[in-house]
Image (cartoon, rainbow, N blue to C red; front, side, top):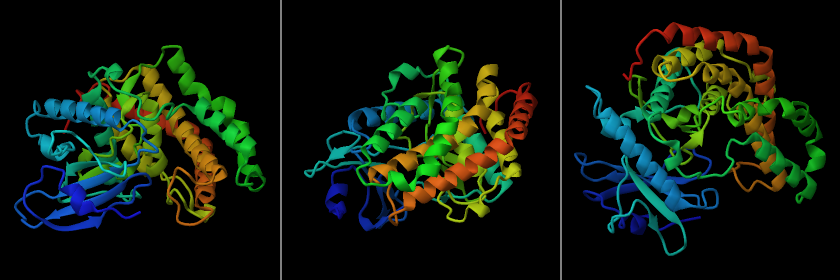
Length: 375
């Protein structure tokens, strides 16, 4: 779909004149554009169309983003040497003082400052990158640990509720509107075999053994901006920031960091685990997170590693059977290819579960006596 982005930009309070507007990023959900400023001394901007079919309550979503970014900036302002404008997304208001713009076609748009001299990665390449990613998400959770999770709305209901995800899968299998179930019987058998064991984190939450915290809920590595020296700078893509369990964030980050191949790798033989990257991420994470996590939360992290890989595979499989209505695809069987890659990753994680849990416990123990650092 094409948009009159120049007209849309005119609804925001920007400085200077537009030099160019170009598509930006590789996100599955929203449409993103880099608005380049003709004056190099003035900021550029990031314009996004929020997918309101995925995020049905855009006002609530943007209230969450405002609350979280405001809290992060306030906390960082108290830390010597921090730069909140570089380390946290800055919302650009509309000309009528709102944090988003609704166009005449029913689309919703928002704008942030464009953070220059940063980069992100779809695939982690070095232990330093993994370590800095761990620090970034550990810091993110720590800074939000004193903000009441009850203040945030649920932008996608049951987002990491594996029971709800499995129920949704069962419904699309029963409907089989695209006649695809016959092609995914091995994948469905894979899900059924593991379904009962994947509710462990939810059960701990229901038993009130895990505290409900404000978490990111989509901690793919490409949702971290690093500086040009590959040091952590800013956590981005805050649409799913809402209450949840820390195991969800840890597991989702590991899902992309530990994998030696892209999440949609066709050749399953290329999918393996990078234990050094896992260890580096864990150490970076506990550098900033060890000071506020409970023992039960720490024990739940390895469960989250298995759970999120499983859940992501379930989500890809559900979307494939349902006709590819959620994730953007590049070819007809893209979601099925993603499913198979995720389930292959899960097999590898299961094989190394004891080792991964040992690494987590050692990293937590090493940092337990160290005052939490936020630099």
